[in-house]
Length: 150
Image (tube, rainbow, N blue to C red):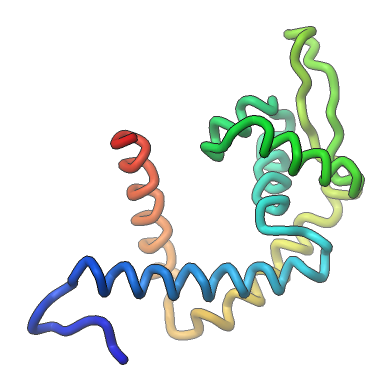
């Protein structure tokens, strides 16, 4: 069943259905690709964020991902147990701790990223790189605008 009718245009309900199906397909693909590395989607998101920023505070992660601090702590504890993340003292703020990736994670992350991308390509064989960039840009704009509405 096709959800776009050129005569009617885009309806909010059909857009919602397509959006939910696309999210489900991406979630399943990502979950399956990350199983090999014993990582959840949340762990992968946090690990990648810490990797990109080198050192990051728990509170900054919570703000960035728009979740409560206890959730960050729970996910980080799992990453620490897997020896992928370290918690170190912040030299500028004695009360605060910074998170950084371990050498093990630094070595693994590029391989995981490559394999996850390859796995995801199976979902989007007929979508060009430029179309995918536009999609991500639109998602980014939606997320940014939703923050203003809250």
